[in-house]
Amino acid sequence: MNSTPAPQLAFIGLVVSDMAASIAFYRRLGLVFPEGSEREPHVETELPGGLLLVLDTEATIRSFHPAWRPPTGGGRTALAFRCQSPAHVDAVYEELVGAGHHGELKPWDAFWGQRYAVVHDPDGNGVDLLAPLV
Image (cartoon, rainbow, N blue to C red; front, side):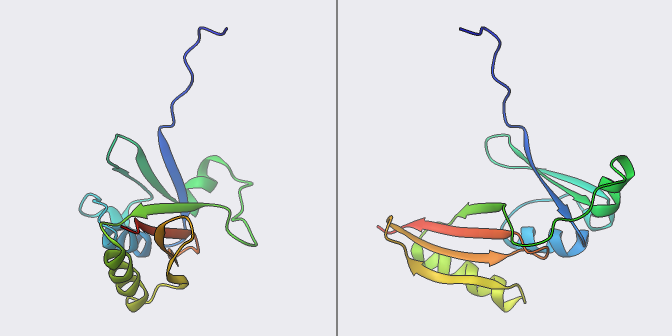
């Protein structure tokens, strides 16, 4: 058996094309970013439990990885936000779609026992909204 401790997940990083739009979207989901973050090329916010969500502009990524290009095609990453109740899923979904964000999957009662919906952030990343059906 290996006695070396396993690495721990430290952050989830997203490359964003418009920092201000991304900050506004994630603030609508209750995340807290420092004042003025909209003008920064790199922003971090601590999530409950200590995990970080890190946003970097495309220019920031290219500054240390010049060959980087944004991916094309369908998204392969999704973030999921637990809501307080099935009605809260509906309300958050409607608020985000009403603010102009793309609603990918309207709220529905999933067979695995959750109220579930998907909306896209400004860069097309899937953001799942969920709550137990109790």
